[in-house]
Image (cartoon, rainbow over all chains, first blue to last red; front, side, top):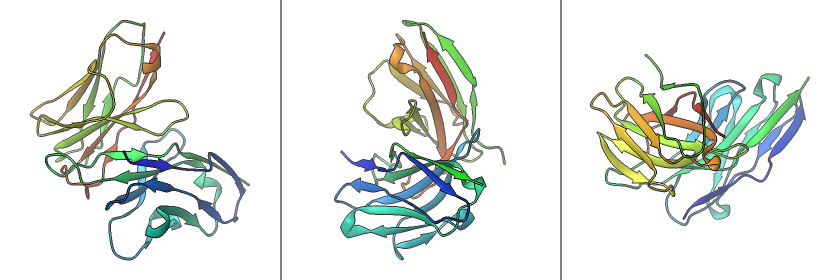
Length: 117
Length: 114
């Protein structure tokens, strides 16, 4: 079964610092990759996704992620974080599955990011 | 466009009881997935419904069951509640069951089992 690992459970940064959150997955086949964010008191929402093509994908709010197939990784980056980026970040993997293809998501355990002023 | 809604927001039950959670999918979405998010963990897939049929199930016992209605809204039922069932239950809808379709999440129902 596929799994997703996020190695940093809690990250504290000062505003304007650079961010990189690690995500590794275990599955040898074709995957779709996602980063979701959950701001305090809000729903999970999609930050960015990778299906195919350019392994460097750009998402909302200045976030980007790089898919490195040989390392089974999909790390999230932002050059300069803001206080408003304080949130929990989840990496997720999706496989084509089920009678109609399916879009079950397997999530990592999440990384709680706190950005200090 | 109305997003995914869930009810109730919070629920407290005791061991052995049964609970029903409800989800209204986003307009035009025919696929609904349910996830359980325990404290400090990422969401775990429970099952998915596509056009009123179960379209896959995660590693959850049969006392977790569901329904999808003709308007694509959905219910999650849990029988014989256990303490470990305490969690945030998330519903997500998508335009279709294809794996390239973004899932839109609701705010969740916080279930506490005493």
